[in-house]
Structure formats: structure tokens, C-alpha cells
Image 1 (cartoon, rainbow, N blue to C red):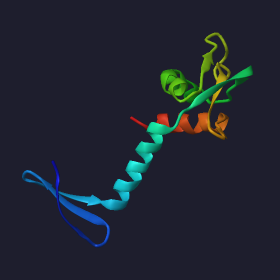
Image 2 (image 1 turned 90 degrees about the vertical axis):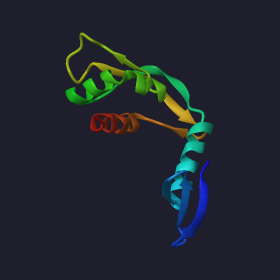
Image 3 (image 1 turned 135 degrees about the vertical axis):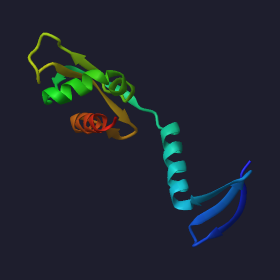
Image 4 (image 1 turned 30 degrees about the vertical axis):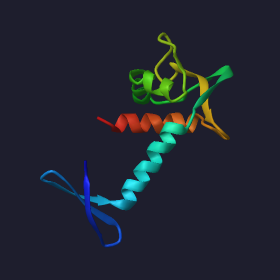
Length: 120
């Protein structure tokens, strides 16, 4: 159980648990709480496309997607791999995710690919 000792500089909480002392950024803690609540309450649905959409990615990005197909599927992007197709033409998008009034698209596939390529 954490014991709050006080506040300073109108944005930080000083707290203690046992022998450990913590300085907590109130604004960061609030943003983290809001983000986690949004993650927990947002429902992502998928929309199957009438026709598969070829993904135009570099060979390196294709490999990133293939290595992380489970991440794309968890985020509502179902990707078909055509193993006999030439490099840069091996991936087709079968579904797109949507939530409330937001439909995600190919630009989001590119963004997720870049994030995954940058992560260790």
C-alpha cells in the first residue's frame, strides 16, 4: 500500500511504500490512466473487404509484416501472404478494423509496420 506524503510544484506527488520513495508526475499518471481506460473500453471490429487489397510495401516491410502477422490480426488487419509472388507483391489486405465512427486503412498498416520495425 502506497502512502501519499504530499505534493510539490503543483504537478508531482510524493509517496512512499516501505523504504521506497516515489515522485509521481500527476499529468503523466492521468494520461496513462486515460489511455489504459480507452484501451480497455474500445471495441475494435473488422470489416471484410469485397476484394483483397494488395499492399505496396518494400521487401523489408513485407518481412516485418510477415513476422508480426499476429499483431496485425490482433489490431483488426487480416493479411494474406502469397508465398510464390515476387517480393513487394506478396501481401494482400483482407480486413480493415473500425471502431465507432473511425475506419482504419492502409496508412495505418504502414504506421504499424514502421512501429514494429523500430521496436527491438
